[in-house]
Length: 427
Image (cartoon, rainbow, N blue to C red; front, side, top):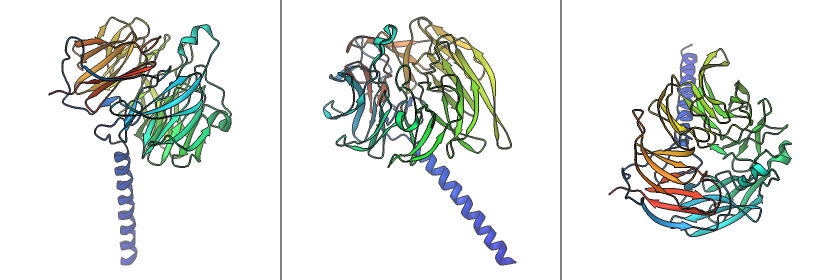
């Protein structure tokens, strides 16, 4: 009998250690390395840089410009930085290319990744170009082209390791504006959304591209946003938006755990959702506004409940950041910049102006207006306070819609054909 009890205790101990190791590995997987920004909005998808010691005020004409890269073509792809290189993507002569540069701005390689998305719709012709930001992981950079070609590339040479045609494999139509998602990787798994009949969301082995699971339960079509990840009620969830809902799936199996109807007038939810402390926030343009969802559990079921909805901060595609209990972002068209209380949706402040994108670092927001004005704004709910600003040069035609990046003491801003690097490290 004593032997049986001892064996049971040993099994319990082993299980405990296993759970601890799994949790620890999960934490390590989301640990941001200094001087790296390996994927769109950072490895934890919060769009909050861990950089410190940055300038709190810029010279009158802006921070020192270190270098400019030209030749990126058209597109709205942002930048990822890891493994000693910077990665982005662009459209040249109707072809999609992935680029790698060293940190002095010298091109290391460029690799074609399929044909670019084109349209004959007059209202959308200005929107052509690459959208997805490359994702770096363990010496490989992954990129989803606007027509659904998912490639894994060697970071030193750009050579293909594997490639998968998502539309063909999962019976998917070309999205209205092409694929815009930046794929998410955790551990050995890669997650993305073909939005096809044979797989709306899929999970792949990152090393081989082999399918692990495909979920067909998610309502709607592609939503253009990129997934975030979070733990709730014993489930590790991928949380994202389709064209008409906010949803969560089990990372292990792809099972749809919950969904909430959420659709705007154009059926194109673009901003990433935010998960925090059992709550999910989503925002969308074209009259949809913002919503906060509370998750509860009953047995194996996850139950969503809408806490609040507001027309404020109807973010189109510039992104929203949660910082110290408050939400920061811009509204659609000329509605300007907002700060809302996360738990209540109450407006804390509003600043007039157009829409734009932003990133947080070292107590400040770097707010890029769609016409190229970059503002350095204090991260406080008390009032909107811009302490410095400068005009980003044009790199082509169209709006400044590529999201800025703060990494390694630098501010990176892309506009169409050009990428600008600025020194924002304090003394």
